[in-house]
Image 1 (cartoon, rainbow, N blue to C red):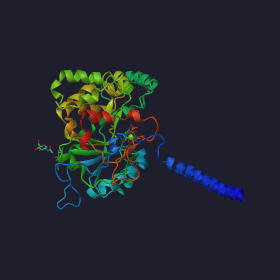
Image 2: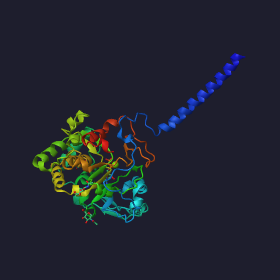
Image 3: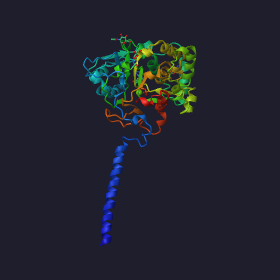
Length: 392
Ligand SMILES: Nc1nc2c(ncn2[C@@H]2O[C@H](COP(=O)(O)OP(=O)(O)O)[C@@H](O)[C@H]2O)c(=O)[nH]1
Ligand SMILES: *[C@@H]1O[C@H](CO)[C@@H](O)[C@H](O)[C@H]1NC(C)=O
Ligand SMILES: *[C@@H]1O[C@H](CO)[C@@H](O)[C@H](O)[C@H]1NC(C)=O
Ligand SMILES: *[C@@H]1O[C@H](CO)[C@@H](O)[C@H](O)[C@H]1NC(C)=O
Ligand SMILES: [Mg+2]
């Protein structure tokens, strides 16, 4: 009697356990669609500290303020007609989390005219003014001194080294335009501040304050969300060419520069070695909120011309992200560079996911959606050299 009773209890327990295991497996499959299997939470991850809104020297400006006024700014997107479907969700999310309250104008820029479909579909997405612009040819195509044979030969060599997009001339043009031309576009000359928005990016957090006026009130030049190491093969001579420039213009280097961040060799010595002295750390420029007065300044103008003359935008594959970052890191006060920790953001495959009540659909602390990408994160270097660890 006792034995069969025990057996029954055993059977019931086994069944419950089996159901529970089955349930766990099924639910973990569901969960695993969203949560990466590697430990995305690393101890000391600064994103895990709960945050709200950034500290500001003056009260943050809200659209509900009495006498609220926009500042001199535009949302900016360089984009192709074919990318319309990928751009629409990005616009919708920027509108939903920020711009539906502030109504900053959008500026869409293209190397060919926008189609009617592009214009009609994007017009549905915002109440704000929209500028549709074409890039003047001379701001887009290779400068006269670029040799096509040498470009062809170098891009084949870079291709062999695995440098992404190296034989796509349009990608080189885009990187050069984003480095030294976008703020010279006739439409952009009307504005001081810009926020760059790319197709296929996502925005997870409500931003209740005017980010441009935050920049203005706090004397910030540049805002970023993600800090990464670059592919050193794409920028082998960027640092040596930059050092030539600095030797000609030592007066341009700011006494509070972030040179330690640019030259760090401790964390990834092999990157520093391949990039000839540059850590390859950079602000990921598919998101940027910046003051175009910096790009329009004499030091940056001279620096860009020096790089452009060298030809590395074509003979190597210098990205606008490392070019912007090296310039900011050398010629600007690091205190004027702001990590928008509170802005939840994704551009495949990286994230900035704050631990904040303003965010939805993004796992706090998450940096990337693939395994093995955490070595690409340079944020800890930035925080170390900019001594900003305690500020957030
Ligand atoms: N109009 C135009 N936009 C481009 C071209 N190439 C790239 N872009 C834009 O430049 C940005 C960066 O390009 P993307 O393909 O996203 O490069 P990735 O993010 O580095 O993979 C995106 O906003 C693109 O829409 C081009 O040839 N013409
Ligand atoms: C460079 O390569 C392109 C594409 O393969 C080709 O059309 C062009 O003729 C080449 N230019 C020169 C100067 O060899
Ligand atoms: C906005 O800034 C640009 C560039 O600094 C300037 O030329 C323009 O006059 C400004 N516009 C307004 C309305 O302040
Ligand atoms: C910003 O710069 C202005 C002019 O140099 C200065 O008066 C002001 O105190 C600065 N504000 C902050 C928050 O640093
Ligand atoms: Mg992109």
